[in-house]
Image (cartoon, rainbow, N blue to C red; front, side, top):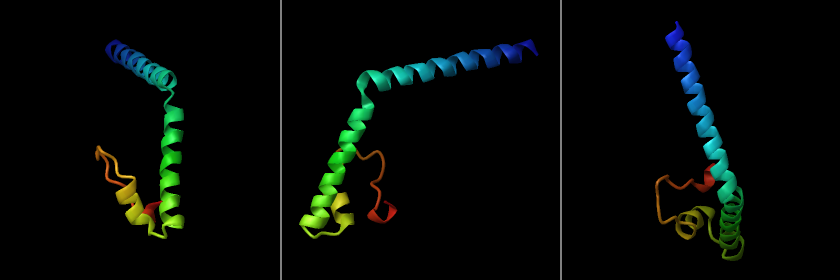
Length: 80
């Protein structure tokens, strides 16, 4: 029984360290500002393509906001 309590304590300390490390990285690199800038850029490109160029949203998202690294598939306009 003491072994399980010790194991849970170690796991709790590891989780706490991970949470603190992720929080420190998030604050230090100011990822929140970078995410806002990226979201604003994507919205600007999408609105320009749809309202100014009179294109459908799906091709604008697939072609104009394409990422160089495609680890995740792009979301379709219907899923927005």
